[in-house]
Length: 85
Image 1 (cartoon, rainbow, N blue to C red):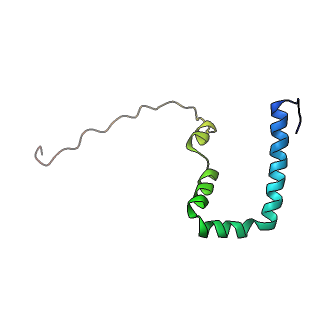
Image 2: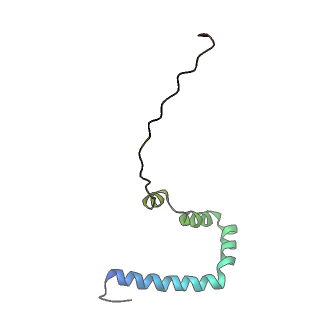
Image 3: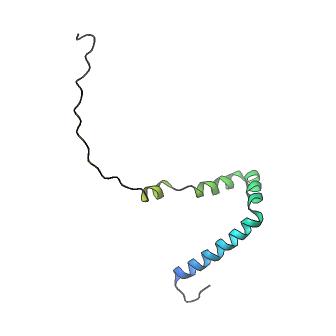
Protein backbone atom coordinates (compact mmCIF):
# COMPACT_ATOMS: atom_id res chain seq x y z
CA UNK A 1 0.00 0.00 0.00
CA UNK A 2 2.62 2.51 1.12
CA UNK A 3 6.04 0.96 0.50
CA UNK A 4 8.54 2.60 2.77
CA UNK A 5 5.77 4.26 4.79
CA UNK A 6 5.24 3.82 8.49
CA UNK A 7 3.66 0.54 9.60
CA UNK A 8 0.90 2.48 11.38
CA UNK A 9 -0.03 4.44 8.24
CA UNK A 10 0.01 1.24 6.17
CA UNK A 11 -2.19 -0.53 8.73
CA UNK A 12 -4.67 2.37 8.82
CA UNK A 13 -4.86 2.46 5.00
CA UNK A 14 -5.36 -1.30 4.83
CA UNK A 15 -8.02 -1.23 7.56
CA UNK A 16 -9.88 1.56 5.78
CA UNK A 17 -9.87 -0.30 2.45
CA UNK A 18 -10.86 -3.57 4.13
CA UNK A 19 -13.76 -1.99 6.04
CA UNK A 20 -15.03 -0.20 2.93
CA UNK A 21 -14.97 -3.47 0.96
CA UNK A 22 -16.64 -5.29 3.84
CA UNK A 23 -19.38 -2.65 4.05
CA UNK A 24 -20.02 -2.95 0.32
CA UNK A 25 -20.18 -6.75 0.55
CA UNK A 26 -22.54 -6.46 3.55
CA UNK A 27 -24.84 -4.17 1.56
CA UNK A 28 -25.00 -6.73 -1.22
CA UNK A 29 -25.15 -10.03 0.70
CA UNK A 30 -25.07 -9.47 4.47
CA UNK A 31 -28.33 -10.77 5.87
CA UNK A 32 -28.55 -13.73 3.52
CA UNK A 33 -25.00 -14.81 4.37
CA UNK A 34 -25.78 -14.59 8.09
CA UNK A 35 -28.86 -16.75 7.63
CA UNK A 36 -26.96 -19.34 5.58
CA UNK A 37 -24.00 -19.49 8.00
CA UNK A 38 -26.37 -19.79 10.98
CA UNK A 39 -28.05 -22.80 9.33
CA UNK A 40 -25.01 -24.50 7.79
CA UNK A 41 -22.29 -23.71 10.34
CA UNK A 42 -23.74 -22.74 13.71
CA UNK A 43 -20.35 -23.01 15.45
CA UNK A 44 -18.83 -20.41 13.12
CA UNK A 45 -21.89 -18.21 13.55
CA UNK A 46 -21.63 -18.36 17.35
CA UNK A 47 -17.88 -17.72 17.21
CA UNK A 48 -18.44 -14.50 15.28
CA UNK A 49 -21.17 -13.45 17.73
CA UNK A 50 -18.88 -14.14 20.69
CA UNK A 51 -16.05 -12.14 19.12
CA UNK A 52 -18.35 -9.11 18.96
CA UNK A 53 -19.15 -9.18 22.69
CA UNK A 54 -16.77 -7.01 24.74
CA UNK A 55 -14.40 -8.96 26.94
CA UNK A 56 -14.42 -8.52 30.71
CA UNK A 57 -10.89 -7.09 30.73
CA UNK A 58 -11.88 -4.50 28.14
CA UNK A 59 -14.81 -3.47 30.30
CA UNK A 60 -12.57 -3.30 33.36
CA UNK A 61 -10.04 -1.13 31.55
CA UNK A 62 -12.77 1.38 30.72
CA UNK A 63 -14.50 1.24 34.09
CA UNK A 64 -14.85 4.40 36.13
CA UNK A 65 -13.62 4.41 39.72
CA UNK A 66 -15.90 5.94 42.33
CA UNK A 67 -13.96 7.54 45.15
CA UNK A 68 -15.34 7.43 48.67
CA UNK A 69 -14.75 6.46 52.25
CA UNK A 70 -16.34 3.77 54.37
CA UNK A 71 -18.68 5.01 57.05
CA UNK A 72 -18.62 3.41 60.49
CA UNK A 73 -22.11 2.29 61.41
CA UNK A 74 -22.85 1.16 64.98
CA UNK A 75 -23.83 -2.47 65.09
CA UNK A 76 -26.98 -3.78 66.70
CA UNK A 77 -26.80 -5.93 69.81
CA UNK A 78 -26.95 -9.68 69.16
CA UNK A 79 -30.44 -11.17 69.09
CA UNK A 80 -31.71 -12.67 72.31
CA UNK A 81 -32.45 -16.37 71.93
CA UNK A 82 -35.56 -17.96 73.47
CA UNK A 83 -33.34 -19.99 75.87
CA UNK A 84 -31.80 -16.88 77.44
CA UNK A 85 -35.15 -15.10 78.09
